[in-house]
Image (cartoon, rainbow, N blue to C red):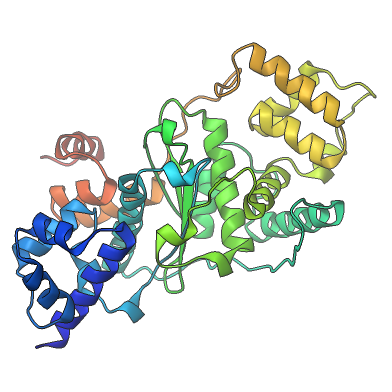
Length: 372
């Protein structure tokens, strides 16, 4: 049988294993016998396109996924969630699919990598970050800010600033109850990719933190990325050291220690002073409190008191004095618009690239000034 049949067979088996499916379950999904499925997997019989499409739709994969050999994996993915073991596979698969579509779009316009994040290796053989660890992370965050020309950039401008630096950013909503706030991926050829959960119930401040948190993973944890997303689901982000590192990176990137030195604080910080920092740096009030605590500006008791005060006022998940909605997907929209204008893709393909319905795509085309 052809090499293509063997490639497809290996990919079908890899998908089955990643989903924990029995062969009989997958055979039933395809409407074939167990023996026929075995022939597909072994490359003795090539699966027809209709059944391959069933697989692609069922598991939110592109057809290309099945046609590329194992050694042609272009993505390494890292996912994070508060309780990742509970995150539905369809959410992880959907994020993975959007990364793949963005890469296809970049291939279509022949846009090679504009930004490969620098990597820093930190040996930490303990479960809690020491003051020395934190200082090292802060130094790395400062170097990255400078390298990305993001000195003094805050809030919504960070999305555009990172895109201008060459980071590929995707934002779309998934159920916030599953607590998948962000994800990241890396391709040697096409660079860094970051996903941010853009659900309207998630404060914009949290989305900004997720954006920089994922940047931290890309810079500090490249060795932890793998092609199988299930290998990277954290049991609990609260106890995972990599998450603590990325959190401290994000906090020090968004609220740099050297800029805080220009602020005046008395010995007893007040909630109003914290709100001043929140508005000035355009980050969440919880991020302000936790970053100040990491810097040693407030004690454990003060941090707990501030957080309890916020929680008692209903701000455990909600954000006081929230930022207005931030427009995202600037480059993604721009590239899809360019291809549509040039007649290289259909409206349905533009909708697929952008992750929207055909009806929404028609409305978007009107905004682009194109007759439907």
